[in-house]
Image (cartoon, rainbow, N blue to C red; front, side, top):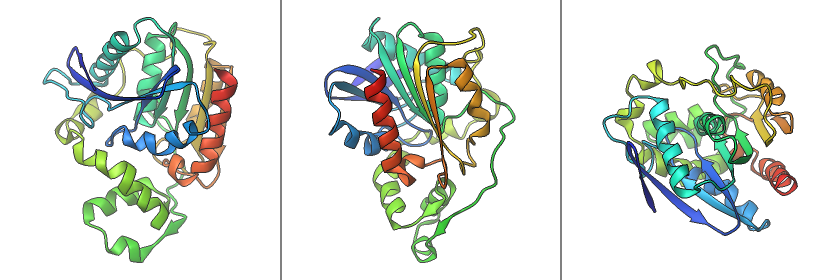
Length: 269
């Protein structure tokens, strides 16, 4: 389905019935990267409607020429929320850059947001405290047979580089990479207008929402040490830092992430 928004359109897919969950994927892919790990959870847990979107400039969500910043991307998402949910409550699930946008959404629509789950989220932090880049598994034979573009993306994202993680990459991540708006993503937006004008949480001591933060101890893309302030801002929260997990923890530690998420979902909704 498609929803017209102020500077383009949002493409989305709705699965199931019940309390709505708005699901935001990482940069450079599309909503299928979230379906891969989430839908098996909902085979066991009922009562939730999953609203998978393609972020603006990703998948089949188009942007017009007026989109120049993360503020613009967030504006499109807020239009979608107002059109789709009206004033109803919903919860947020966001990964990486989608997790940063989710923080912008809860900042702007805090009355509507019941809960928020962030996986390896990007933060409004100018100087990131990142761990050293370490690769735990490397299947050289597998890597040597890959096209350069695919190999670079796979090696950048994963610290476990084996057949199982590559299979997930091909099925869940790569299809969205082919659709992403490369012109926008390669523009000066990231260097000049990545950070939202309105810093999330700057005007509140605490928020009452239930929250879950799942981080990888070896995530050299978004890190984990900068995230602990979230426990103060959202005191009704759980923060899990997974050992031997990188930025793609929902692939590399899938069963553990699913178990933690499922427990939070059923206990907080």
